[in-house]
Length: 562
Image (cartoon, rainbow, N blue to C red; front, side):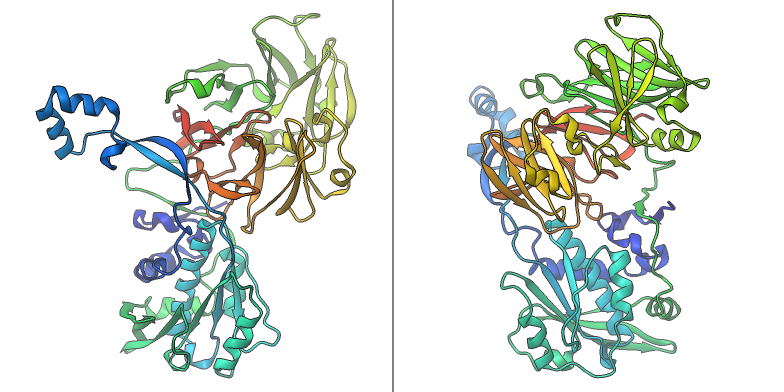
């Protein structure tokens, strides 16, 4: 997939601007930033800091009562040094954490597609929709767009690459009326936050209505409008528009992209992002990541992680022969299957296994072909489990049982939804649950399980979770996100979600939503441990962070593979 390269100043907009060409994205920069500042006063990312939730780390600012005790001891013994550190901002404070209150309601844009908004007005609407979509994603919600004058109103949403062409195609020959606005607003829920994108003509006929963004041309040049006046409530300002030829191409849809994700390139950057592809392949407290070379496997010990101070991870790098296909930590052994010179070989690191010292398997017996091998190289390693003396690996949609003598047998199909671009999803494999599934879970389209808790859903957004005690919880989210795992926050089940658009990682509980900001921003979904409240996220340049899904704190770092 081709990456769209943007100026470093547009870093916060990388995901949203992936739907536009670089030229248009850059030209919209001043309009986007000014609108975002104005809209932010009326559309905050969260409803407030939420309830206090302990301490999240250390910081260089805070209230006097948040100073570390050691700083007060310094003030008593060395007051001049204390004052110097205070002036230079070197004192350490405890940073409080807050549990985010679950956001209710959707962000809705009612757009004026009449003649008065043609041209400059549509360009302002484009920028406003990008701003609203980005803020809705940050809140964990979605943006819905409806065209005034339609009866019934058809609300559409999705990612910018899908939403913007649908909005652009909506053109109406008649100007909307205040009655059209009231008709559209009547179809919304009470908790929805409705925005009106229109012209001053209609805005003046709706005095007192909140969140009305009106625009009209302000200055003209030989080729058309060059500046636009934007008004929101009582604020009014003038902003430049893209060049005339670029504006025409935009309004014809020629500047929209359906492929490619925007990647911000700082002046010092060069080369592709490193990919470590983290995975918790077994219930052992070890994280496995790929190294820079195909035969390199890195194992990170995360045992007793809550008792350690935050530090750079002490990892063990294993150089194996060939491409690592599957691996798993079992007891004190790390076992891996590698493809080398046309054969799949078994490597055992640690105490040797009983039986023959060497094991070699024909790749065809495991369902491996050239195309599948290439795809697996770009994904996390597959899980490798032990079943008595045999090995089990999910390859090509089937569980493959490998006996100590190298004999391979088919052990049945993998569970529905387990094979994903981000690797094999243990949480969706019924055979790993270890007990009988409820009938509702068996019949549902989506299934998750972890540590005795099972969750099921029909649409992938509204889930029912049943704990080992038999308690049921309702977990749901509105944003377009994928579920990366199921964990326990205390005794309460929580879904871990990742949104491709906003790259936000969140913990969804029955009583609220917590954004795991320290694990957000990665280019792929995080890895979640199947039995422990641990999460590993790959951020820029192969940099990994490992920490707790309960507290949201980082405990270990793993540097770049470069």
